[in-house]
Amino acid sequence: MDTRNVVKPRYTYQAVYRYLLDSIEAAPRDTEQRLPSLRQLAQRLNVSVSSTKYAYALLEDEGRVYARPKLGYFTRVSSTPLHAVRTSSLLDTVYASARQPGMLALSSDAPALLRSLEQPLLMIERELSRQYPRTQAPLYQPFGEPELRSVMAARYTCSAHRSWQAEHVFIGSDLRSVLELSLRALDLEGKVALVESPCSWAVLRQLQAARMTIIELPLGEDGRFDLQQLRQLLAREPVHLAVLSSTANMPHGGQMPAQDKQQICRWLAQHQVWLFENDGYGDLCFQADAPRYRDHADPNRLLVFSTFDKLIGSEAPFAYLLCRQHTGQLQQLFLARAFRLSPIRQKAIARLFSLHRVEQHAQVLRTLLRERMQHMKALLDTHGQGWLRCVEPQGGASFWLEATRPVDMRRVFERLLQQRIVIAPGALFSQRGLWRSHLRLCYTLDWSKDISHALQCLVKAIQAEAQTP
Image (cartoon, rainbow, N blue to C red; front, side):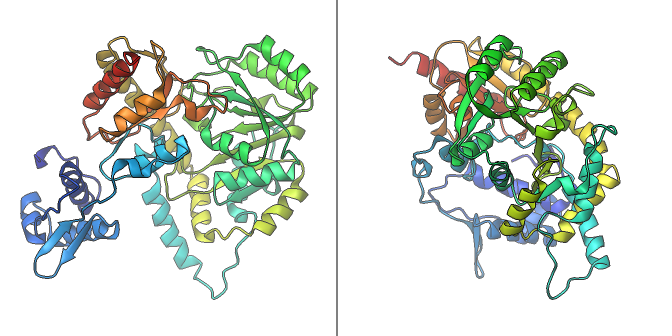
């Protein structure tokens, strides 16, 4: 490997780690490979021995390599064939495959991979750890740290009529738990839910777990609903809950016009339907001051939910919700769940917001996302060969692509899996089996890989599937 082309991260050991990881993934996994010694690698990459030692230690912790006394480091032989990760669930198969070493995941939607706030977060956490020494019995706040709840309430307050208080904010360990408790607190389990389609797989899975009847309303290519169809549906069906994206629709990437959102909110209020606004990508819309449903919704039937990791990174895995009503039921359920979340980590996240670091970071991240989106679109135009219909997204970290000929993307997924490439078939984002010829293609991926080749493999797999009887 030509080390002159290695992009050096902030810390030298990270560059060494990436160099070794690329070498390991490029080698056959069914035979053991001897790796350079600490000193040899240090000389090859012109770094210190301590950097190479730390990089090897990380790989050893991950189970990718092991050390033999007096002999050095060796790769571990993988005895697990690719098909072993397949399960009865397409979703589980996709995510298990994407996490296998050596796989190129075109399916991982993680905006913060381009640029995260993890280093500032951990620095602030270390500073706070000195200010707040550990006690023998740490006091975990069941609803989230007061400082973080206050900061999030202030962040979502935009006027005297659209204001939030800390008591309206609840912090949980992950999105699944927050949604589960929300549905239970509002007595929505087993009721009818309306979702935009395609819809987040995480939302669909939780609604299914709550035994809800799910009605999918397809989005058009322009990112809009058929409003007449929606009006008739609300008049005909006993809908209790609507789950909608705040700005750009995810994973579709389209954007609902402000007048449509106003009309939808009027109809939801008329039929007393709870609106769950998914704000996970709210800050990642490319349009400045994009309209949000919460600007027009009935505040007494509004719940906003999101996570921190899309902006900050994986070191901030917590989810949160804002709701003015039924706070007593929410408090009771969150208290019973007794989330044991790191108080220092929550204080550090709050400090990032209060110092406006998150707001500044979001501006930079949106620029990076737009640049990567345009680069990926150019590659799709070059290698698509007319087999993929591509609509430029209005935000987020992925394209919603459609094959121009009828193909089952599940089968395309199976073909690509044998080439160690993972895609997200459109079927993941529908309970009814819609979007069979679609896929989500992310542009927050490992750009050190040969993405052009991966896209060529994708098109060839689509061609082969289209020609299969």
